[in-house]
Length: 384
View 1: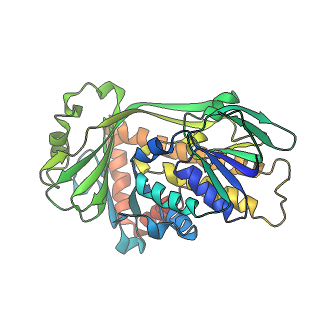
View 2: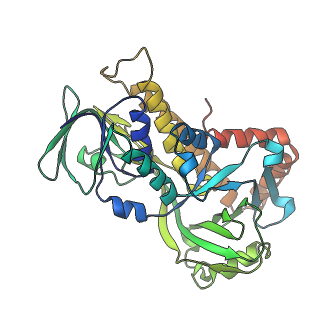
View 3: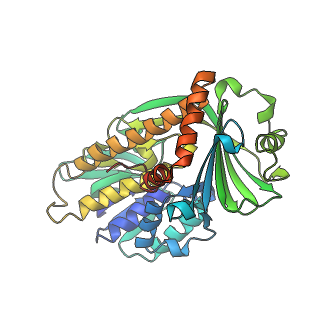
């Protein structure tokens, strides 16, 4: 079998890349290990304006169910006190702060579009037995001993990329010495579609509004605080009530918390021969700003810009060297920005705390600075 492109992984990034390449009239085969299991995974994503525009161009956004607008966002330091707060609102910034979407709804909308696309073949329940960079492109062997050849292969499998392991490529890691607890809550007082982030010395806590009476929670916990009773499943709802001063009334968990280690990384190489790493296969950042998926979409936008460049041949050697160079810089900058914010806000030191409070007060008084921050976030943390 010969195609223009092989994509490994039918997650959100893999399917988004496939549809983007199809719009550039490329023939694509997606190889997926287990699509049904992939579709069962349901995370909550914060979507930027840039990512929304990307999905509108793919004609996917209008078919995504249960999109919740973020009309405002409040950032707190140590407690829910207006003296230690920065607020961002649609009224001041004249744009939505962002959007909250469940991963399964994005995936289903993408999958429906792919099933209608004659340029895309989706091979489900297939494993890759081997991969070879050749002079003409790349060749993979799938589990029925069939070979698939293409000009390029894009790894969109996530942080545990089998392609990267096969090629013996490495990651450069940032260990945040933290774990994340992810769970959903219901509350009795409406949240008015406002997202909230509070920086405690134990780590940042994000409140993502999935409806007016529900939040998706991401609680980051420094390892040295993991044994605190407040983070036990039976206590955490009461803990959230306390730190929010019951701003949202009575709170209860609606699912069992899921825990995972917080580790940021960048792939040592984004391109190896004719293999290209994209999204979580190439990089990962701290979840405090909800930028993971958005950074992956920025990868795709850069790739498609290269493919559509009139002065660049698709068969050109090192076609994606610009992608590797530019996106690695952008993603490393994003990772460092978030790491710096997380580190500064978590320091338990009175002098540092006073500096942070004064800085927040200055930002809160300046609509100009707040507009710049929202614009930067909506551009997926990209400076250029």
